[in-house]
Length: 145
Image 1 (cartoon, rainbow, N blue to C red):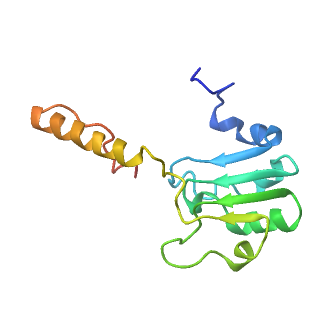
Image 2: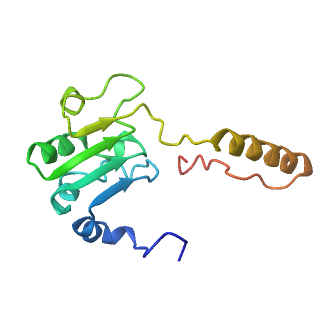
């Protein structure tokens, strides 16, 4: 078990985990399988008063279902570092105006070490490339990430 984890579960147990969780942090890849993964059924399964945090991609959370869950009092609040269409337009006004929703400008990945890690990865990959070795963190275009 990785440090900091009390347990790991399979995706098939998502709704069971939602029933138990006070906070839900969305941090998965956005793929066709994860589009609107957190939708009406997921919100219905969530523990009353839970908090949703999305640091992945906006398209993973069904915003209409999120707005409905907030309006019904199902959620205590939400923190959104991403939202649907974030590079094209402002967030849905209903989310923006809801005092239980915190919206940040896609900054959740930032840290004091981010630039250092990026430079270090680049240098390691440059050495690997020059030596003919496999690179680290290569994007799999077939999977989309």
